[in-house]
Amino acid sequence: MKNRTRALALAGSGALVATLVGAAPAPAAPAAPRVASVRGGGTVSYPYVPAEHDIRFTVDAEQVPWSRPFQAPGGEQGMPVDARGRVTVYHAMPEQHFTAVAEARVDCVVTGGKTAVVTAVVTSSNVGWEGRRIGISVQDGEHGAPDRVGFSWGIANVDVKPDGTVAEPRVGTCMAPAPFTEVVKGGFKVTPAPLAPRPAKP
Image (cartoon, rainbow, N blue to C red):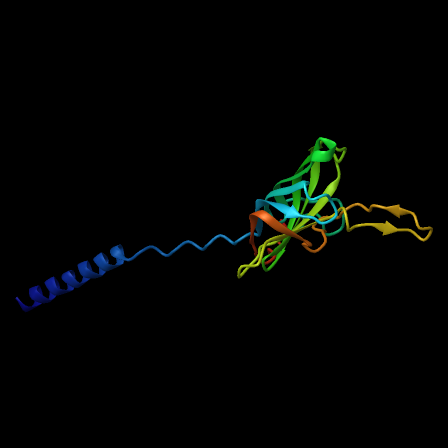
């Protein structure tokens, strides 16, 4: 009888352990690494055009690290700042009865805190910008500060040659000036992320 009681007790303990193990939650899957992104749209205040001009930017961009390989030493896997998405530039000039518009495909995103730089190659425009890379910087304002935007034309990216002539250099990937204009309508969200580690070579 004593042995039978002991066997029942052991069986009961085993059932309890099995029940507890079965009821325990499965280990959480490791979280996917966060990638940098910039999203939003806004109208900016730019002091070098008439006040009635309407200049807007929309950005929908996110990093896709190591996704754009290129033909150069070390470029076989691409870059950690490779990205995808769209940028739209809109500039209405009422006195000229004309609105300039350009759509561009994102190729690079890099962040530092709440500031980001996005570059994109123009795919369509009504001002002859097709094939041109443009650079946009965005600052996601914090603690009540306004958002800000910078862009790679107008006051930046000018190469003055020794003879005084001026050329506009090509914009490289993830290159743009500091965000020098204030967003007066709309806004942007910058999601920062550390650079992705280099993947193992196959």
